[in-house]
Image 1 (tube, helix red, strand yellow):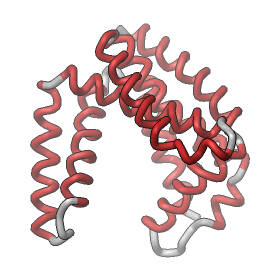
Image 2 (tube, helix red, strand yellow; image 1 turned 90 degrees about the vertical axis):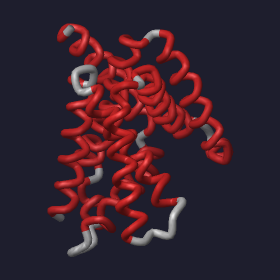
Image 3 (tube, helix red, strand yellow; image 1 turned 45 degrees about the vertical axis):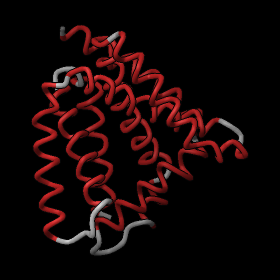
Length: 202
């Protein structure tokens, strides 16, 4: 059960930091996103050996350090991640038959929001980070309040990664589908509040 609590706390804490301090933490968040992206690409395109892992990590670190110097690409990336998350939420609200087009909806959302982010940089950094953070906060808080018993049944004793994977699949899948409207409303409200708080910090 401790893995369930840890998963929820980490997701909520990261979400709160992004939602209310996203613009201040933008380069740190951008570096983390670039690192994870390069690392995943590196691992998926190699044989998974320890040498491949070291190379992927080194490339991820180098890319993360260089990301600060490609601000526009970073703004697009944050916008694209937010657009992809928005596409996922929209798909939850669509009829079950539309789920076959989930990839198209997510890709289209990522592209459109990423391009719009380039046009209105500061506003989109605030909105994008507030939105990305609020999706973490709202879904995990609601899951903790409404389905904590169900989350407990997903815990795999002694295996944190298996527990985290099961929790992520459940909260992002079955739980989100059942509570899509509540998650959407909560996410929109918290995004607005988070963006306004970030604006006041400027």
